[in-house]
Image (cartoon, rainbow, N blue to C red; front, side):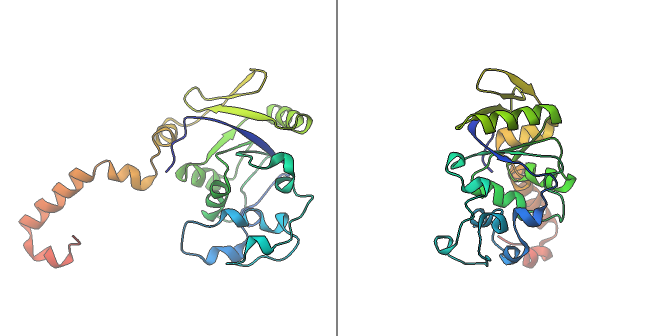
Length: 216
């Protein structure tokens, strides 16, 4: 998992409340058993005027010129600004996969659905919660100033605006540790690989009849 320490990026405003996971990555794209390739179908039904299906060449699609991510001023955005209850709906982990693979490193919103919030941390995506008044201010400034960027300092737990103003945010200590060190659940387990290997070797020595169940 990619480490998150300090990130400066262009902001894209998703000016909708209750954006659900089926809008983030529609159900027809969940058939894949891989964890890659979902970024091209992020917000598929909003980004394109034609119906999308798995394996389709993105170059053959008809982009919706009115959708925010298709507007040139937001090309390359890596921070998504959203309204309340972002990520509601089903629990699909593909939603944070799609956001991450599109290029987003962080989301800023007043609130999130619990499962989406948890899944985001597990996949290296930082969901920041700020009060609605602060989020509204960021929306106003993003709309007003093309090329609007923010700096997110996870160590200090602040969002830094272009004028130097800062908004502080909370993050649970363990989640912060995992993001800063780039550790997902597998990475956390592999920190103890030597102890795991030693345990398995000792168990095999004591119970050699288990050898046929061991995977080398």
